[in-house]
Image (cartoon, rainbow, N blue to C red; front, side, top):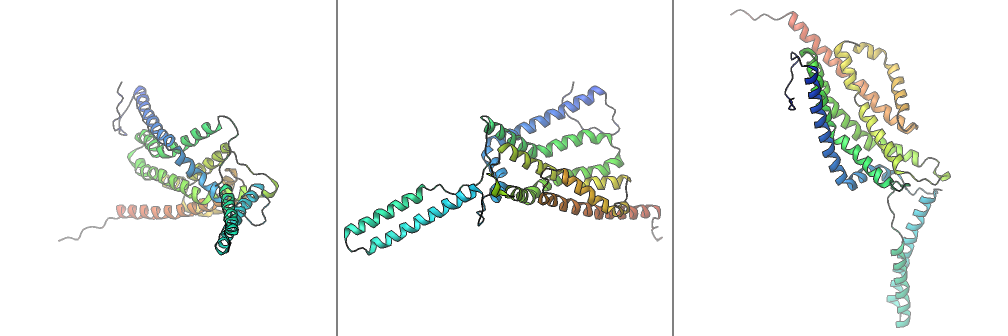
Length: 327
């Protein structure tokens, strides 16, 4: 049984065994690509975890005035203690330089050294990191995050193998529509992930972690944080596929751009329901998800209108060709 891949045309007729053989080979390629990416992500697990933890670090421990959160108050106290000790050390150094006798100078120098020692002993302000509760949770959380990162990195290869397996079933006309749309999928997915990482995730974490924080000792478990972060990233990556779906429906002829404009109010309702079902049912996360989805919806209608106009112009030119002038 052949294990190499060869280009398959729409006119080719393959047996069930040949289809299964092609599927097996493409699955092997996907597994190898994912395994390589997983190995790289596991090798660079510290960098991957820093990237995933950054939205949490940027939104927590803002040292808000009057905060009742015990952890934030402890952080503020430690920072103030360090500043006071350094200021006291500087004051004692100045007094030691002005002292007239050696004993007084030595006493001030000793006080300055003790304050500098106190300032050095104060723990530095550390960034917020998720906590682990189970014995094996550091290992399992690291493996899970590495697997998620490997999936994102290997996604273009996985999508290409899926497209290559499905495309021979399309006719030449269907392939002319499907190929450009399928080429958009990985780019839109990456754009959605990047948008969620920089725009949606920090706002969602900042709102949720600081909501009514005076009533709780807020400790965020690594398992829950990574699950929430990955779900938001994947959900936004999938949500950015709206243009592909709309363009596919309009190009096939299932719906028209006029219908999409007519039912714009219902689309807003559907987008709101989808945002409500996604992780983080708080208003900040919902709005952060709804706004780009609706912008993509309107942009897809505009793009579909341009494509329809071009298609009608092409059909008109084919039906009414301009005869060349006689010499």
